[in-house]
Amino acid sequence: MKRDYLKWGALAAALVATASAEYELARAVGFNQFVAAAVPAALDLYTVRALRSGREVLAAVAAMIGVNAASHLVTAGLVAVSVPLVVAVAAIAPLVLWRVHSLGADRPEMTSPVTGDRPDGDERPTPAATPKPVIPAVPPLTATPFQWAALPASKVTTAVPAAQPRQVVTAPVALTPADLRREARKLNREAVRSTRRPVTIKTLQDELGLSRRAATELRREVVGTVGP
Image (tube, rainbow, N blue to C red):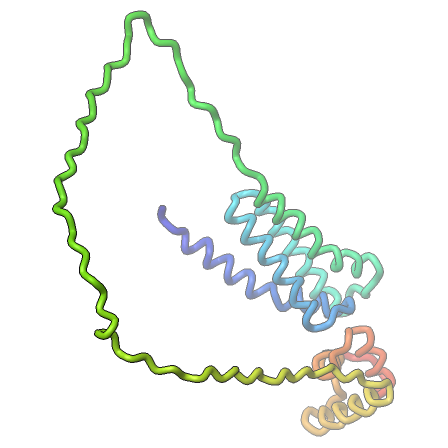
């Protein structure tokens, strides 16, 4: 079967173009950086499943459009983060699980073969008899005694247990409010020195791992005004 490279190429470009906005929306409603990456991954898997099955393609594309539009509206400050928006973003992964499972479980039913009545006197031809296979005679084999002395002497080595590698577990360090304000002031001084403008909310989000709301409040304490 001939592959449709244009369709799958367009899909790959669309998934890459929309993944960033979907991730930023998840971060804006309070997801951490690891859980937020699951939102674009879930939408991408749903879109691929819809295209492969040839069903619900419009629903998958509409979901991508809605999530991207909401992300850009929140980033531009035109829409505030509210309870309905948080609930909608939190419901993306369970809804995608339901739809992907449904698309994978639906299978076309097998139709029974159509049979018709044979007219009278129409008999099936009798198959020809299959000839019996001819097995040639095999001469008897003579047993030869095994020569143990001809085997080379084996070397015995002592098994040494492998040393188990030590596992290093790193625990995330939670910053206190005082530490956050101190780091925010440091980032603000660096921003003013390099760009002559106060630190942005996105910089506080990326550097300190904060949600957009927490970064906005922290910037208000450090800078005194709310900006981009």
